[in-house]
Length: 424
Image 1: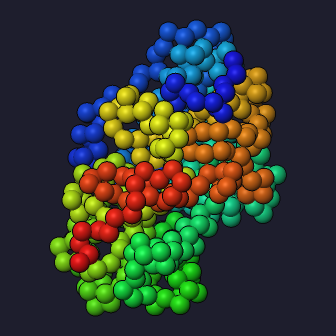
Image 2: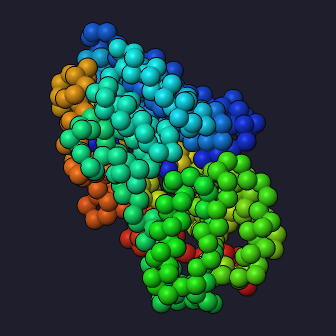
């Protein structure tokens, strides 16, 4: 069977309170993997690392749903290289080294596991080395800086490890460019050139916050921060909001990606706002963000270096398939994991044997296919997906009337930028 990812298909981007996650789990069904498709030979297992419990469980649920949807569709079409596929999900919990190591060990020790996928497993991506040692095909999503730091010194050491996320360098450089462009064209005239940046004490948030601070400084802005909060639950933002009131910046950036934290910041800020744009790193892309933040979410901005392209045929098909299966928005990780599974299957079909892990791992890195996220090819020096023109674009979103809409790039945007209601 050959899976054509370059043509439209008839199917096909942290943190919530556990009570909400449990309600979500209870309210939606995950496909069982049982199909009427027939395939010869024994079944094979695709491993998934996901935070099913803890602060990032909302992301973990989306990962599981997206991966299972793709597995079900592959099985319905006859399997992969003659094998029916089973999904085995290993919980990385709060992303501690012990939890991740235990999950990796369980999956890699299973002889039926032929590949492993994840949106993210640890905050440092240290498990990449474990996957390389095991000769396991591994497609990862988050932490591009960490992936680059591990792989780029010796790419040949990691022939089976590839990242569907492109470089995060744009996170630290692109948003300041957009702000100045919006000032110049009158989209959002800047009242001043002051920016306040909040970070969370983890490599992902700190790296992005530092990059943004450097870029804004180079452009002549007055930068306050990064003001770093502890990694984990943060429910009281009084200190940060007091500083915002004092500084009165044009732009506020919060790189704490955990959904509950970002939403509580926004609701507390909205009680006594300044005339500032608010940019929140990643968290607004999680479906539950709007539920947690309520009307305070309207107007917030975020960007994603990889996201389902809603205005393309493939993007619409992917989102529609996920929504039909689960009755909810896929966010980022629902689609990312869907596409990871499809990319693994495409590589396996090219090899002709899904159980040949070394060959399949190498074949993943040679793919050049159109997906709902954009054109996927991999940089051979970093093993990251190629970004920008001809690759996966950086997309900007704004929450408007409780909905996430793309606003940039202009070509293909769903809506225009709207000045947030809290700005006079």
